[in-house]
Length: 339
Ligand SMILES: [Mg+2]
Image 1 (cartoon, rainbow, N blue to C red):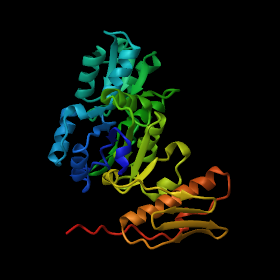
Image 2 (cartoon, rainbow, N blue to C red):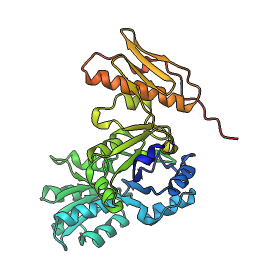
Image 3 (tube, rainbow, N blue to C red):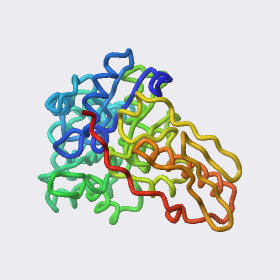
Image 4 (cartoon, rainbow, N blue to C red):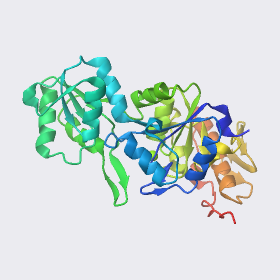
């Protein structure tokens, strides 16, 4: 039985899980095709409120992944739901964001977009807005000072691109936050609205969320009480796993999305040892010790999962804990491509 057999729906973060900038994560197209052959429902969940689901689906298809717009859930859709629940149709709203965000809010929440704080907007909605000027930022801040409720599609401070990390929506949110005394209401991960919108749209009863960041993806899954798998194909690696607080810890660990199709990585844990597959970690007054031979990527991940589980147990017990980074685990083995 594979991990995904425990769930009716598999939800995926995109960058670092399905693709890395312009290119697919190598395992993703094959794994998604294998999942499509089962009756697992699939959803792609993105904090990005500037790309229409059609555009995201086309990008996935270009990478060899079957996807339609209905499989894509965006923070713009979650924002529209938030506004529809909170403001009356026809309300004036100042939107700092891409055309797609504005269109979604008009269509689904019947807002009336306005041009400035002079138009007395009841809300300011902030999304990634590449053409935004400093004057726009100041105007939005003035509207919030005048009483508009402040919303943001997401708080990702950077966004990965093929030119390196560039400032994300969260960077502009932070610029306003410096001048106002409270935080915005946020739609995207790790906040619940986007996750709830996803579960609602896909009618998911027992989903698993697959992500590459503990602070957004895994925290977001935990915030709505669903299981998760952290994958080591994107932003976060073993050190991020060790330091995760309880609400940032995944249910499962994988190398990449293909691990959904493998047996569950189980850890046998007692007070001073943790075992996973052929790998064992023990702890004594000298620190953590690794027993076993890391022969491939899978056994490497097994060793790190055992170490994380043992470390979390000690941290949660209030004990003084050794440095997991001093365990002496080898670097990640280079993948042997199948012949
Ligand atoms: Mg990601």
